[in-house]
Length: 47
Image 1: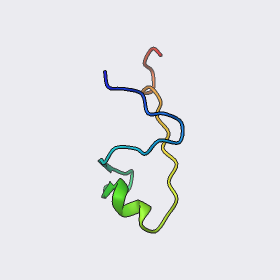
Image 2: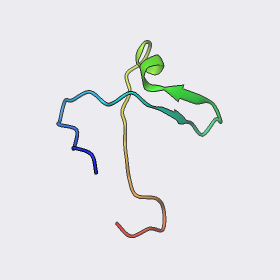
Image 3: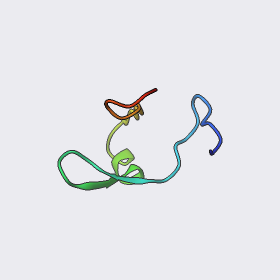
Image 4: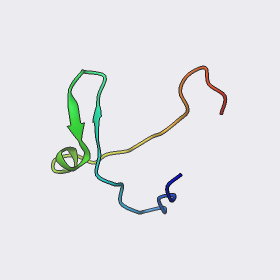
């Protein structure tokens, strides 16, 4: 497991596919918008 990100820390560089099917990079989105990242266990999984 990697180290936890401290409160106020910067997220690592990554890209992800959104529900609209497009792939976004954090760096590109941050150029024009504020971003809130929320992580949770998948549906119907323990945790």
